[in-house]
Length: 385
Image 1 (cartoon, one colour):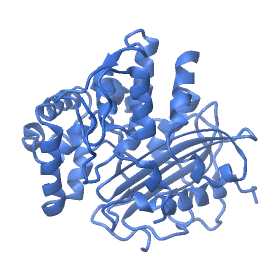
Image 2 (cartoon, helix red, strand yellow):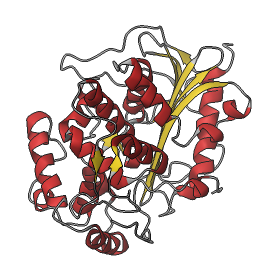
Image 3 (cartoon, rainbow, N blue to C red):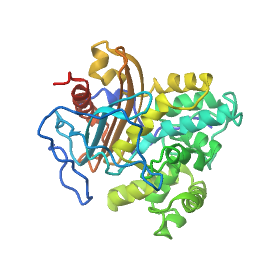
């Protein structure tokens, strides 16, 4: 298929690099969503956490975030519900050594930040011999998602690059379905991230939000579904999504955003996580991926193309040895995550999440988001008092 003119409606996951460089109210205005707001500690210094293995509950789920200092206030105003987790992590245990957080256990929509989990699942499939980097795919009525999309015959390796570098939704959906919906969810489940949902391709979110998924419309069980029930419902939602042309979904979605927008529906429809859980996923992704040398090289090469390195203060200071990052945006939603390996050997992870921004198009808030991320990184890297 030929490339289309991208739709004028901004949809989750269309990360335009030029817009990322653009600059832009009080941070964290109250919302109807109940957030866990951690009390401010008497000392502003980040808590140093003993390097013990990450702890799980009896049901196998990762425990809540450890008690840490509240993240510094955003240096530049940000609106809506906000979440942040920044930590120096132990490369052996993945446990946070020094960390700050704001609402680290609150659930947020991930938007395209989730796509790094598709890459990880893809590389597991590559190591298992189930997929080749030279395997090629065409864009079809069923698999085309919103936004710009690849040419027919694009191979797996290039699709993985487009998914992270360009945040190409169709590339992500092709790869997500190829490895299997549950295989992507397994990335979270294997780490005990029980508040993290990664199972749905991008087109599924928008079909659900636009009211076109008979499955989503017909059940109250989706939000709390786990295991086999979630996998079954996800397959049905995905089948609903594949019946619609992308341009038709876009028109219906525009009408929904203009007249019936519901932030709770965004949480039900999109993939979700918490700042702490997703920060843990990022740490595992880079420090305990379980991938072969070749697959790990592919992963780092592609993730280095994701946005964030140039926005980091430590990068401008010449302190960064390695980086991998991914961001996402949607209707009043903005997310960023990253892994930073410093030349002094310390490893830092960050996860920024925003929902309910007073700006419907959130990309101009990137500079404000990274001002807060940088303040968090400064806090965890500061000398111990």
